[in-house]
Image (cartoon, rainbow, N blue to C red; front, side):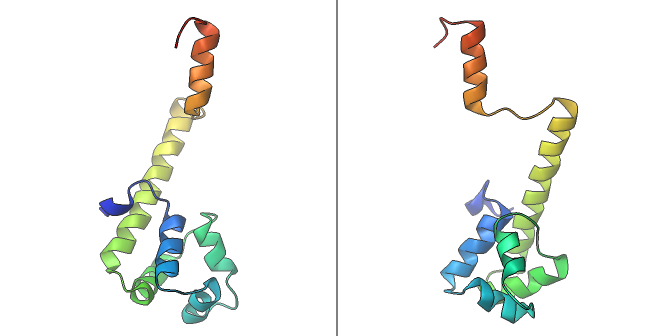
Amino acid sequence: MFRGFFMVTCGGFLAHCRKVRGLSQKDVADYLGYKNGQFISNWERDKSQPPIPVLKDLAKLFQIPEETIFNVVLEQHLRDIAIQLHRDLVGDIKKPEDIILEQKLVNPTAK
């Protein structure tokens, strides 16, 4: 897996690659044949992910190995599945600050 971007979302990775190449979202959209940059914006904000066939084109445009971009997308999917399984089995994921607050409410002398 691509360890250099551990815990970076797929969208964050795509935005980083685009910016490193000095491209705008519109540039990427034009290269891929989209009318505007809205799809790219949605990908970068993790509202959606690029279709699998588009990943090869993105790798070529960003001049990165195809394996790298596929691994980033795979890791995102695995994280999403793990989060959903945790929610289904354990309940909503709590923020660390919420856990600390709950511990203090139960045991006010806890640090």
